[in-house]
Image (cartoon, rainbow, N blue to C red):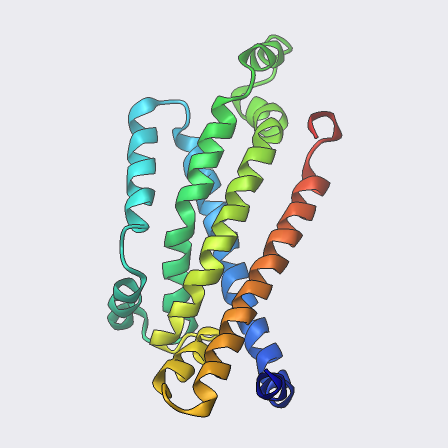
Length: 215
């Protein structure tokens, strides 16, 4: 155990730097997944067939093994952060799309009809009534997306993506050496810390952006 703490002390700067890279990858991917996922949810939640197609397509992305998807991205986007961000965005869509659709469909229709009776158009009702009421459910989907992507981002090291995956893969490449376990464990702990930070941040953000009347 003392050897592990010595390792953390020696590699502290590297762990912080790699952690910031990991957070950057996940942060960008979560933003993209949220923007695209909410758009898809908003445009499909009213009609059954488009809704089913959206959920089926985004759900199918999660069935693709991450190793395979990252490798398939290389001929298109090369190596490094770009293919990892694209792949993570794809993996992050389903929870956001599903929760956006669920949240919007659970909005009390009496409230929507009242807003319509007051002269609000469809866009006004969506922006001022439906999305604010559905927001807590949408944020829950975003939190799930963030937690899923934090773990998958580590696999991005296979295509030279930044993040704690570099520590994990370096450790796996040195199996049998004294440094192997230290590298893998420190990478795993880094992923866990990043996951906790993202979940806490999104929980606070959700609370701050949710109307007090529906908290």
